[in-house]
Length: 629
Image (cartoon, rainbow, N blue to C red; front, side, top):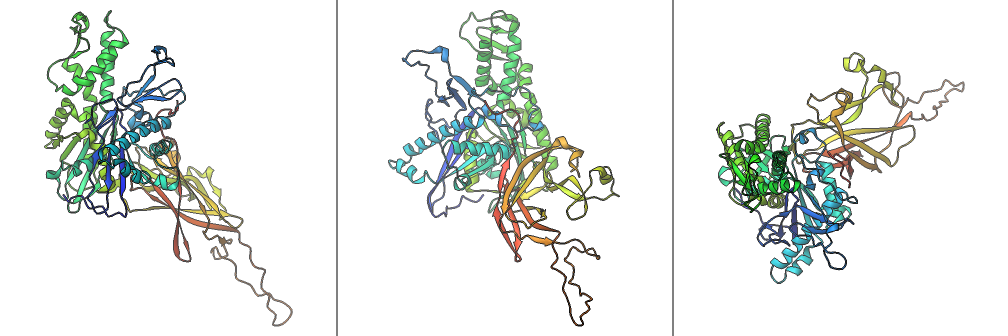
């Protein structure tokens, strides 16, 4: 694999990547010095825990006023105004809040046991993200200032106004989630709220970040060769993100995504939730331990030890007390330890394993590249589970497929991979997750059955033609591979009885999430359409073209000036200058779907030369749950 290239920028820059995870979060960074090869580093010192840890718990404690009083590994100080203990005002512990941002997508809501944390009454999810991003930023700043020689503070000061931010998110998240994350970064004061500041924030899926981590760390160097396909299984706290790639070349590294990426709500926290439900059910039969405090304590201990150590053989004891007297043989408690049978333990993991295998097989069968996918890499915090790894390896090896689990600290995969994504940018094409398009009008064709059924909706447009509304015009179909440089255009024609000037453009971009072939009309499967976003802009320099009623030949053009049969010989008279029937402006909305974030521009021709201007992308809310407090 080719080595990382020297940075050729004009000035020193700093790249910060935030991995805000469901259970743990981290920050990685790289200082880009002109003429030097960038080196990716990870923040490994946080308040409240020993130095060397690359991640902190994704936890915030809020007081009753909505102020964050402790974050990460810190413990809240329960003191009243006089310095004494104030146990009546115990702070609200907020964890697992990342999953509140998940999209309203049926494929992401099938798992049982999804945590539903309650936000403080005066907080929105944007506020909560801003609080935690701000904390991660402060920790990164302190680490960089204290780590990079005695001049660390000066180094930070020279970089703080020109920081590039990379935010990672699960494969299944889209523009609505990205928009909330961007607003959170701005609210936290990390970048200014202006076009320049917003442009310094980029996004990458967790699957793609994990691929870059494996490559930049040399973890897959033995498996890299041109025309070879690999699959990344990033098993994290909340989601399991699965992505498939093809190596187009090795020198230089050029990679393309070749299947619709998967996002499963089957991360380690879901396994923990199943364990908690199982423990609660078992303890209901106990007169001594049928209390929620025991349920939480046992579930927490399972999460800390048994979940990682269980290999699928034998029963396991989850120790929650050092008291020998803590026993209830009826429910399997002896010497402060609850017995869980092998079958019970397997039942906690197997739904996740089955879902992963199904997604793997689906991506293998739907990949757009030649050749099968035979090499798999398991990364992420959940990858530490011995049972998960052994079961996946056993099932894949049964099909002569190879699963590898890098032996380094793959809990840093997303954060470090996000920095590599920004620096190395190996992936040049991605696959459309859904079918995208717009609602439009079509000319009514009475002989077409689909049109005839909607004849009652036909109307006469300003051009005089019979039209049908609510037609769906796809611009990109699900499963199609899209290069980053490829653009998609939707021509929009605006008509008015008066000359057009400073016309406001507004195009709703729709996403079809159904399972059928692409519908011709939206009402064929209207519940499967969502408004992804609205692209807006103002046409300040687009020509306003006069249009005339069709002449006898059927052409839409001004009539010829006729000769009047006047009595005065030799006199010719021109008709009055014809009045246009209407005016028209034509503009293309140019969409780039091949990037990690949708981009939009307006394009039109003036004197035969294409002109462009930026367009605004306004996202609709697409959340599975209400995200306000």
